[in-house]
Image (cartoon, rainbow, N blue to C red; front, side, top):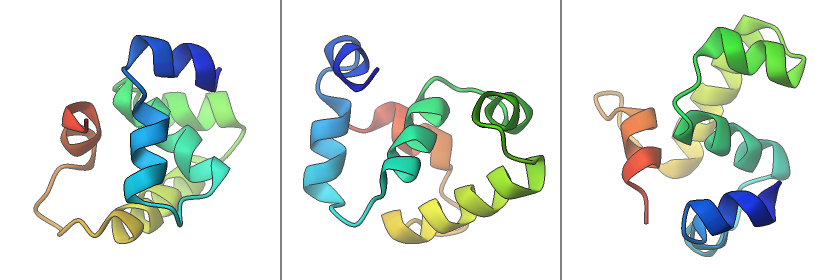
Length: 81
């Protein structure tokens, strides 16, 4: 999955790991889902988590990426290079 995603999205995971080495594999998977603009419900279904669990993971990811509350997480990941 990572290799194919990187091919399509121009080394997305490699650049993400370089800039944010503290991200876990689950964080990286969530980043991929968000970059694909999936809804919280869809991510929950795909990953086997509850909606509340995905919301918590999004909150923790936002903190790890150093984003403020007024920055859009999905837009950040879609524009990330």
